[in-house]
Length: 398
Image (cartoon, rainbow, N blue to C red; front, side, top):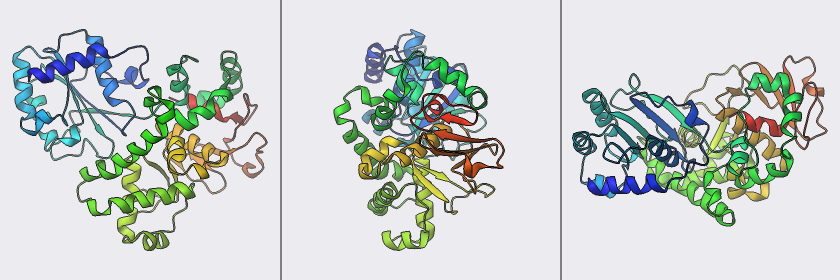
């Protein structure tokens, strides 16, 4: 136990507070049980340790631990927590919960038994943290941490610091908002780099090896994280990777499940299920036609990679501007918790309200004629007018 507390103290002492994710302000840290999920590389560990540092408490009162630590191969979480409470422990921040068997039951027991203890836990988005054997849905408040938005990327690099923009405000006031923001920075100057190497915070360590690290992240998700899904057959790991590559080469992809299952060598239902897993792992974003219900065994109508950095890592030869535009818009909308579906006559329908057509600076609204609440999202422009909105501004939604 002493070693775990020493590790926690070291991590907290060395953690910088110069940049914090916008999610940190949305979380009510006073809740007794908080769950944070997210894909690998998005910064969950940093978020936890920063919050511990803000408490300015010694490790015996506020501690960080990771359940993939070798200590927990031979020691139970409950036993650690009980000893921690005896030392005066008040805050326990637990990382990588999905790598510890029966973690949900032990967390539930700690929550029920020790009301003086506040627990924050984090894990992969590949699992539904609240749907475990133990019922945490009535106890835990859950949040999801995505990669950096374009707005956060700019703040991270000390280029611009501003608050997120709501979608209704963006739609109604985009000309004024863009005019104000462009007084302080050149949005098109930095967007290309963000699309290439700006989504995962670890770009700060070394941009020259960033793509290699993204490739490693993809392999870790497909080779390791997917194994934590109940019923997943590890023998199909290579086929999952093959599927992801096919999607990357062909995005935006309209899946023909019969042909795809034959090519990869997976049963149709298994293939559709694996597409669902890739979505949960935040490697792809699936788009379903407006008005259709969504289920695990229903094939999506269109598939994008989850973010543009994945496109550059998996299939840079297909990273054309049109694909990057649509991937970026889908990514920023979904991460801002908007519902996105596929309309008949445009690229995206958002919240069953706004119809979006995405294109270059000369894109017109011809095909949106007679469509209410329709917008043309145009690349390569700094400011727009009427229903023509600059693409970069959607990077300020979260």
